[in-house]
Length: 437
Ligand code: SF4
Image (cartoon, rainbow, N blue to C red; front, side, top):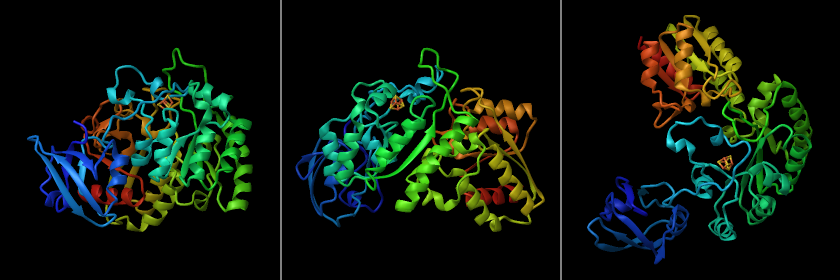
């Protein structure tokens, strides 16, 4: 049912008015509420006339006076109060097209919905939006939005997204930026397609829209072993990743001089592939491109350094950190730092190779439970296992292949400890795990 209320928060205005789970929001100040964007915008008024349909079909008209930013206190059955829009592209690098068959149905859904961009930070291509949608973003001052640009070259963008309507991204970005919408841009970079000079040109174009476009993140394409029937593309290697770092460094230096920040940042994977040292912490500003894998290693290093004094020096015991190839060196270094501080703690770091998607997928977040179990068995590892939260889906209990945390615990005959790798969290979880032994 559209606009069905699923949560009424305790002590909220909604609760005081007698609104219950299962009721339906019909209108606000006489306006139909199409989705969460309408809702958020309409609810900012200080005087509201709200129409609610009770579960027995009764219609209630309620008048409310509230502060501008006071929460009404309800949540809806679906976060965007509408069906999520699926994408109208067929990108040459789409990860969903590279998934094996037989995985959870929800993993195959290709969303490309600006409302999810606003609510959850998802990236959108702007291709399935019409001019009215763009007007609504501007009118409702939805900001920031995260846009997958990939290239500003219209013909190339149509080719990359396999969508003949995908070429006008720059005009749309220009309109949004001029209207004051803040935009974070993302570029999935494919060697021989949109890297090198094409990437430089794209970044230079986007820079013309600064400060509307606040930041750009470039990430290397991820290639799984399931590409049968898809375009032939390749991933980066040490040499090509290094070339990209050099190219982009010239732009970053120029932008730092002009605006005091690099504007374009490359994800950590580029540095790992090129075996190059990461930039210093100042380079990453407030680390808000972590979702793109930009600055994760640097922030971990900094946070471990800052949290180390919280490590309990009286505890002792053994742990095993699980990670992928890409972060292995860094996690091993982290383990060494912790063991140097307290030599009664023994930490093994298990580098798990991604056989599920193929060895070219090296990030920890895409490891599956089965690969972890096989690796634990092969290396005869038992005891407490530390895994990063980003390996898990569905309320922190299930891996991408539906193997559960419990399955890992059975194999390891120990406990799985889920960490955020924020530094403080890691040290805190180690303190607790080993204290309880
Ligand atoms: S926009 Fe492209 S990459 Fe994203 S889901 Fe659609 S086809 Fe896949």
